[in-house]
Length: 315
Image 1 (tube, helix red, strand yellow):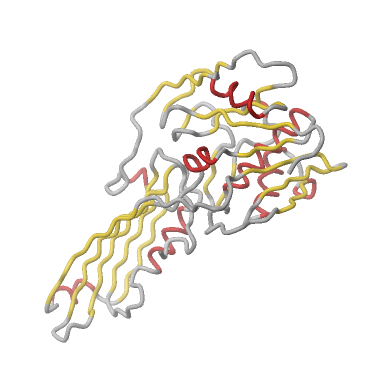
Image 2 (cartoon, rainbow, N blue to C red):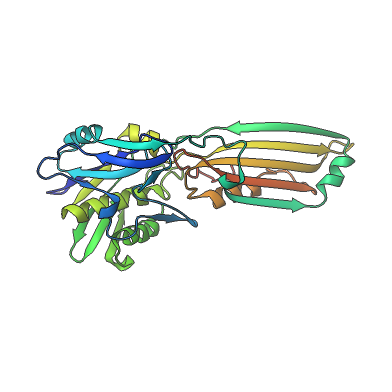
C-alpha cells in the first residue's frame, strides 16, 4: 500500500525489560525526518483492551525488551533503520519479573475459581489418585506477512488501513490517541489472511503509531514491521503451566478433578481475564466430572504482552 508523498515510521525500542527511562538520544535527523515522543501525542497515551491498558509509547518506565518508547518518521525506510540503530535509549535497569509458574500476588492480573460438588470428599474416598503436570511455551502465530498499518488525512477525517480482526477497536484506539471523536476516524480493513487470532489488539497499536506519524508530519504514513521485529515483539500464545490431580473410583471412572492453571501473559495483560476464563472453562476437556475444583491465574511478567491463539485459552 503506497501513495504519493507517503512517509514511513519506525519504533525506537527499549533495551531493558524493566526500569526507568533516563534519556533518549537521537542522532542528527536530516531534513524531512522527525522524532515522535510521548509528549507529542495529542490525545491520550494509552491503548485499552478488556479493562487493561498499556502506553502507545512508554513514558517514564519500560516493562519489556522491545517496548516502543518513541518513533522516527521520514521518507526513506532504509535511512530510518539506520537512524533507529544509532538512537540510544538509556534506562536505569531493574531486576525483571520473569517467573510465572510460581508468582506473587501482585503479579496476578486476573483469576477465576470454579467449584462443583465436593472434591475434597471425593479425593478422600477415591480408589486411586494420580497427578500430572503439563507445560506449554509461547507459540508464534506465523501469519503470512508482518503486521503494519497506514494512515492519511481524508478530507476532515483520518483514514487508517490495517489487517485487523477488531476494526472498531482500531477506530476507538486511534480516536483516543488523537484526541478526536470516533466518527473522525475511518478504518479500512485490509486482507487478514490466516491470522490464528494474532491480529486482535496489536493492529490497533500499529494503527495508532501510523496515525501519530501522519498527524505529526502532515503526510500519509506507514508503519511496517520487519519479519524479525514481528517475531520478537508481536503477541504470542501465552505460556501455561497446568497441574491436574484426578480421582478415580473403584470402577475406574473419573470422580473428582483438581486443576491449577498458571498462564504467563507477559506485560499489561491485554487479554488476561478472557484467556484465563477460557482456560478454566475448558479444563475438564471432554469429560463429565461431578466434583471439580479449578483455579486459573493470569500472571504478569516483564516480557512481550501475550495474546490469544486460535481458541483463546482452550487449546
